Length: 102
Image (cartoon, rainbow, N blue to C red; front, side):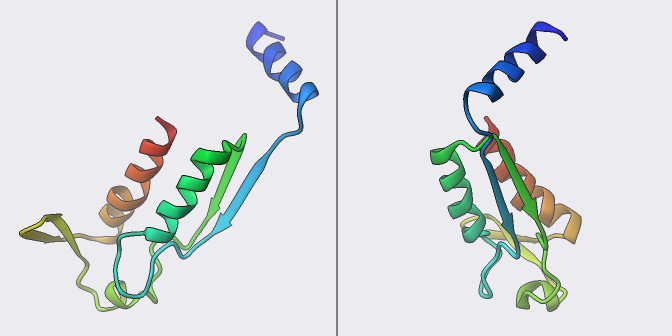
């Protein structure tokens, strides 16, 4: 094996593998700020598991704002924008995960 693989294998021998698992939805009924996901990611930052497994729904079709068919996201304090489900996922989930990883 390469030296990177050897290093990983040696690390695994020294300590148990830690895995965090969570399932959505990650929103509250009154907004699409994803506060429960934010809280989870703070715990992940603090505990630094080796693996994080997230299961959906990430964009829950039963969430009242999503179910209304008009998904407004705040662009800034004075402006909101209608977004589709793909962009909601990109803006609210992927961006948060990128910040957590960095």
